[in-house]
Image 1: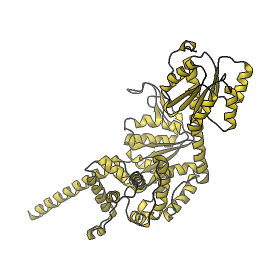
Image 2 (image 1 turned 90 degrees about the vertical axis):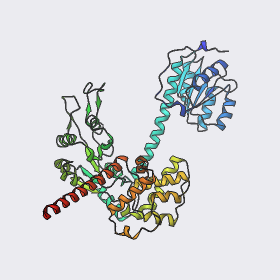
Image 3 (image 1 turned 60 degrees about the horizontal axis):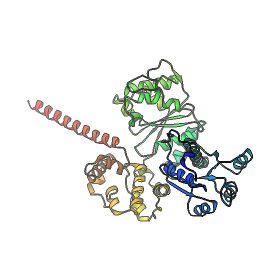
Image 4 (image 1 turned 120 degrees about the horizontal axis):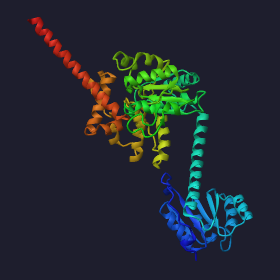
Length: 483
């Protein structure tokens, strides 16, 4: 009987970055002490560990359960570990196998590796030896999965690098623009409401460009604190500011040779707009705290849900940067102008979400589609996706869900005279009221960010103040005229 003294104990291996709980291991060894040792060692780390004494019992377990990794002794009673390994490979088992043995020569090792063993370890071994070998197997499996997923994504891109859903005239026109503009090196500015798919179009422009094999790096300018945006984009050196304990490259560096997508660019502070303009003109970045400039080759695609021309007039956006970005500007069509795409979009989202949620797609009825096509969708495609996800979770396109997201009853006569902006405001206020004033929940249901919702309310409050000021001025002028 083998005791733990036969295994050299060493300092523990730091493998916290690996998700061992996602993996299952089968130990096959006729020595009871070794089986118990490996079972106890791995049970604390892996999602499932089973241990048996021979290939026959192991085969019975594998007929019922999936194992990502086998730890297999060579000298087993009956069928040897190498013989069984050859059989496993012949029958299509693709998982990793680590062979262990107390007696081996060069010929045995070669036979093991030819049979498809992932590693070959001699007993007695150290704890860190077996753990590092397992780590390598798990990492190899992870890379294989990621490679498989990436190949499928690339195959999909090869078939349709644009990847837009729908066949409305607005989408067909957008596809044509992407095919033409994607091939050009020029800077592109995407303008449109929140949730219209600006990042989808930015990726399509990248994938149809000569830079398609290089990085696509998206960054949401609104999601980064103003004091950190320069470091995030340009990088910094160690000690450049409090907390900069080490040097770090910026996103321009990582996008070198590819495309940098600056979403919500209207949220950049004015000082940062000046620095960005300089980078666009000189194609050089200077990390924070550094005296050295780095040459960068990056195509810029920017996006905003605000009217940047109006932001320029208001003094919130640099005019020269606006003209530098808007070499080619593309207006994103809102969902209400491509309502005929709603059935295609819903099927697309349901196929995606069926995998993510583990539920079946819902049947689409003519009544449901008609009601959705009559709705103005202030949150656009993002709001539609959120609605589909919520419906799939609930198991149906429920009436109560429509009560929050659609106006099923005919609108009051007065509402027929409202402008689209006024109708949007009323809908947002109703949804926020239905969420008991919880703006985070209202933003989620509308398919917009909380920051966008806050800005809407701030703009309306400012509009009210301006109207009140104009009213006061008019009353004062009236009093002066009377006097």
